[in-house]
Length: 494
Image (cartoon, rainbow, N blue to C red; front, side):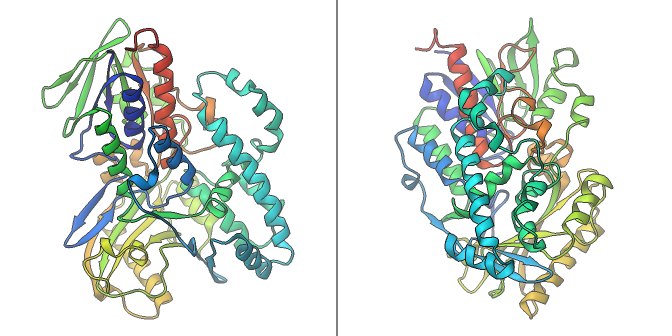
């Protein structure tokens, strides 16, 4: 039985572990942290349970398909509920509760911009076609060769994908109102880019949002990690935590073993890195065996970093919904600060998740609130204590303004998370929050390859390679690397 060592137990590493074990490989996963999940982890503090990272559950079909591949159902592991409203969207002009029901959303659009409901139906219809083609074909490509794109079903529909037009230009063909345009542009920020450099194909995320729905696993997002690890354990995957990979021993273009700081070493037939791709290349591989240089990585467009605040509040905040997007300042100024000026914005947009609106199990008392606050920031600056304090006050003042009452004196638990924490916990390149930006020339075949170009027994999965950042793409990435290795070793499996 061929042995595989996976370095990193993020979502993609867990996915790869499950698929590879099912295929007949002997799989061991090592991770520098004490628990699985990577960014999809949690921590507890005096009765509050905080999800550390991802908080949006979109594309439920991807999760369902993953569990179905192992003759399981999502409901075997956690209880999923659809949120309504999907989220609250705050602009300078108004506060919008985005309804889960599409007809109700059309009605809301019509109130904001006459005849926009007809435009929305056309826009979402095309976005659905992109989504179906992407989920069924595009997102499953391994990115090894441009010849993959010659698939007849892709060529036949290439004109519908809007690959060569920006998301912003695509949206403006349908809508004039600034608030509606912002509402449809916001996912680009969480794809690591801007509306101007994210291809129009990613309007499929508007379909995922509006038609696919915004969901929540009761107990918190960490239930996803718990479910995937439980499945991996059932499939016979071995886990070794608190193991920090320090170096690959490479001879004749093959890894002989992975050395760890604990003086343990792991010998396998093949290795899969679910560490950040740049970290693996620049820290675990010697210079002559690297596929990508330091100069290459510095030329890539990386997703923003972030400040995250985790707050436990001793009273209810009536204004907030489960998800809240504060876009009441200039979107373009925020993006320009991050990407062009390489500075942190003075008046940032921010996001607040208040999962206690849906789930009382994550708070010590039902009269309290659990807040996750994220501000996308530049990777070029490591925020000082003064900057962290400034953003904390900035966000609290905004929340109190909308709530109409004091919140700060009711905060009984507080933790913050900044660029240095992304680096120390996840070896995040430049302290990025969610990987490689999904620009045109960093999509599909243009991404760093799943199979190492020099080392014969090394592969990659995760948000720096195909298909891209986010939990659903990470699940797919694990499946893609497994299929690649099944084909490579098919004659020796079992």
